[in-house]
Image (cartoon, rainbow, N blue to C red; front, side):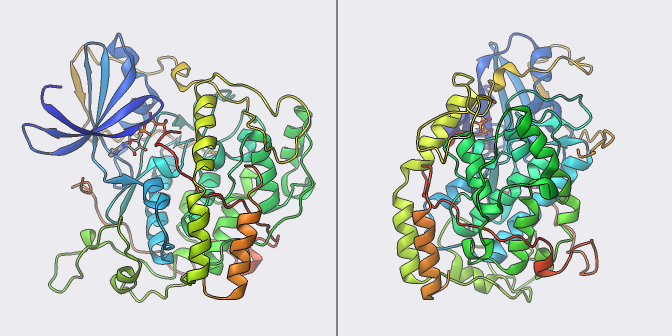
Length: 489
Ligand SMILES: Nc1ncnc2c1ncn2[C@@H]1O[C@H](COP(=O)(O)OP(=O)(O)OP(=O)(O)O)[C@@H](O)[C@H]1O
């Protein structure tokens, strides 16, 4: 570790603290994740999911693990450095993001996910904190929970942060797959549009209630398997009418709303795969190539950082012929959003609770009987076990010897994919903002190796229904509490 100079702590997760650091030899800025528990052998380190999965991945939209160092029984991961995470970008944000910005981010993430899923992995803990941003580039990070699709179910342990947790996981299915990542992406996409979490459940029961109130309670037609799962744990879904998602996400285009609907579908088998999502009409409206990835030609518009107030600039920057569907929020609506932004404690409380869940200290809720109506109590769910207890048995050669550090080259080993899955200024919008507020029930630089993503697929591609017929249900209003939290799961 003497090669690295730690500069500043930039994140404190459940399992490690993350530091911005400099490689003294090369001057390269990196992120050093110092794991909290001790590791007494290399074998133990090499069997960590984060290592096992990340060392197989080499993609411009997946954060690159450069090196692993074990020193004095302390394990350090050296990652490429990213400026901030998506949650940090959203939390103090007043102006809504432009749809073009959201489209650009999502297209990158879905490319990363398609790559990962095709190679037989799914992430299982996608959330804004695990999506790292440097200028216009976004990358998937934190593979501590990543799972091989071909690994043997049942998957009994804890998976994913509650607000982004798929219903099959909430209902303790042991057969979930990469569709859990697609659910999380639907929730994240919606949050990018509204700057509010879509399903901010205060406990697992409340989480399901929130989901029902947005997408409507499931029935035999929409998710027969889910009813069985619920039966198996003597759980009864609340009978809640669905909401109109377009009203909940007024700044989103019809295509964006349709995509979110399809991702947040009860039945995991009906959610689109990441590769299919890339063909969705939402991504046909335009394709934005970040300035940093454009060929260097004179008159290229200057790059604008993604952290600042970039909305107006963004409109000019995105010169690819795109029609922005974004409807900027009115001052009144913005004031309301700000107001809810300031009610920040909710997310922190809730996320702290989730952190407690993750540590395995708190148990229960759904397993024991009846659904409790939109819980205002700080009840905590039961699925959780500590990630630190999830070390999987050695299943591959850990013939790593006993190096003091381990660097990864582009070891892209393909494993067969057994993926069975494996606000505008109108009165209406003000009303929507009010509705949202009332319905708060519960509660460095981009990788040098980055290459430009492929151009958008043709409009004909994919089996997407156009516009509204993709899902015909209507949707209700989610909670609108604004949040603040430290960067933990
Ligand atoms: N490569 C990186 N570059 C810059 N910041 C990073 C990097 N990796 C992680 N971080 C920051 O540190 C935070 C925590 O990192 P990470 O999620 O890997 O830790 P963790 O202990 O696994 O967290 P969690 O509690 O989510 O499981 C991230 O949300 C991010 O803000």
